[in-house]
Length: 211
Image 1 (cartoon, rainbow, N blue to C red):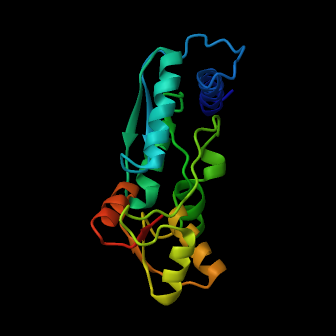
Image 2 (cartoon, one colour; image 1 turned 90 degrees about the vertical axis):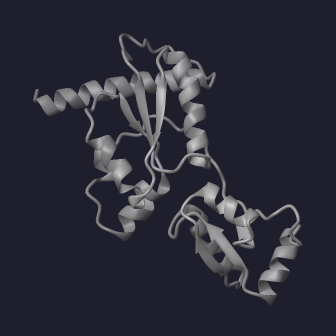
């Protein structure tokens, strides 16, 4: 067996153990023995900035799974660069299960479909745990006159509302595009780079609506 195949087999076994721990952390039960893994802290790379829903989900997962494993799972945020630097930083580490990646639609779907990337989502990564999920939603300031979806539609049909999203091509932006298409609307889209920045922009009056 080649060194690459041995590393792959070892990595797969560690992922199975990690998945078992993650399952146990959610109270689903497991009969898989954890053997000697892990023997040191684990790094969980997130390609989004701190404070957003992806980061919060990663930290909840890290806290629960880390408690079961008995070692810290350290969340490391590496935003920017169309998610490519964060994705590649995981591939550049040893395939031993001690550096894992928080899957994201931009990393594995949007970016590879819109540009050439130095990795293959199908061949270079192994999914082993389904973490928390989140749905996109419209939100406004508490004092906004847009208190219902009907208010929003009426305003959007009479004027071009500014729509704050984290990045062009990211799921919030795609949701806004779908919404505009379904209801015949047109927005002034403003990309504010991160979800927390979108919230800040909304509070500060830079945008009318956030996704």
